Each structure stands twice: as C-alpha cells, then as structure tokens.
Amino acid sequence: MIGVRRFGRAVGVMDRSKEEKPATYGTSLVRRTGCALFAPVDGGTRHLYNLTVPIHICPVCLKKFSVKPAHAARGWGKFCSIPCRSTGQLRGHVYACHECGREIYRRPADVRKSASNRYFCCVACHCAWENAHVRCGTNAPNWVAGHSAYRQLLRRHGTPEICNRCGLADVRVLVVHHRDRNRKNNTIENLEWLCQNCHCLEHWGKT
Image (cartoon, rainbow, N blue to C red; front, top):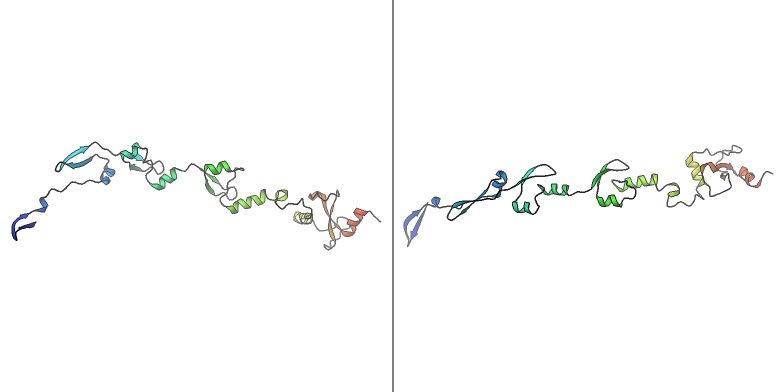
C-alpha cells in the first residue's frame, strides 16, 4: 500500500499487491515433471504450447535425464554429464601390463602401432621386460661376439674356477681355453678353465 501524491497532496492510495504480476516458469520444473510449458500472453491469459521434454537414459551410468527437443533433433543429449560423455567416447580396450599385471587403457592407435602386442603400464616395466627377454645375450646392443667376455660368461654360469687338467685353484694363473680353438665360439660347452702351464701345453704340445 503506497500513497499517490499530486501537486503535493495525497489524492489516493494504490495497492501494489493487486497489480497483475507476470507469470514465470522455469526449465527446472519441466525437467522434474516432463510436462508441457505454459506461457502468459495477452494480459496474463495462459496458452498451452505443445512442447514436451523427452527423457533419455545415459548409456554410461543409466541415469534418467531430460533433453531439449531441439538438442534431441540434432542428435545431442546422449549423456547426462561431461564425465559420462568422456567415458562413452572411449574406443580403446583395457589390457593387463605384460610385466606386473596392472590394468591399463590403450587407444586403437596404440594397438595398431604395437609390433609385439604386449602392453606396459610404465617405462620401468617395459625396460625390465626388455632387458630380461630382448636386450640380453647376443641381442644386446653392446654385444661384440663375446671376444673379450668369455671369462665373465664362465663366472656367471657358475663354473668352478679350477684347472680342468691339474686341478690348480689359484685364480691368479687361471685362463679360459676354447676347446675347438675358435675364439668366436663362446658357448659354455666350448669353454673351460686351465692354468697357464696346462694352457701352454694344450696349444704347443707336451715337452
């Protein structure tokens, strides 16, 4: 209730509460109910729009949600939220790490580029598997035919450091002998420990 003054005098009272207020509506009501929309026209007269909001089901989380008809006509509104949309757009598969067994996701492009069809969760697992199965022995990048590594080969194999001829166990005088006289043939079966005296007799004959 407010008073209306004209030329400094109060000439009447106007009741604001009786004024016609414009009707309002929101999309939240439509989303909750899925009903038709009402809009005020012609001085407050309400007319019905034949507009219903379709209800979709999210293919990721199976949650029901409403979609605007214009968006549904364009093929939008397939997912209820951005995280569900990101999950639904994934086209790859989940694989187990070939080294530790941890589950990892790989894109179709990663699968096509893989030459061994083995997948690893990190560089450490990849290097651990590669060092044990690929970059070892004759496949190692620093392999030089074992010309100078036959002593380490015998030690790694666990062959006792004892002369196979006289039985001397002094490591200061032990050397590695190639049985077929081929220094490039560094298999374990072709190597044996000999002392320098027996090694000299083996190559130059007995005196």
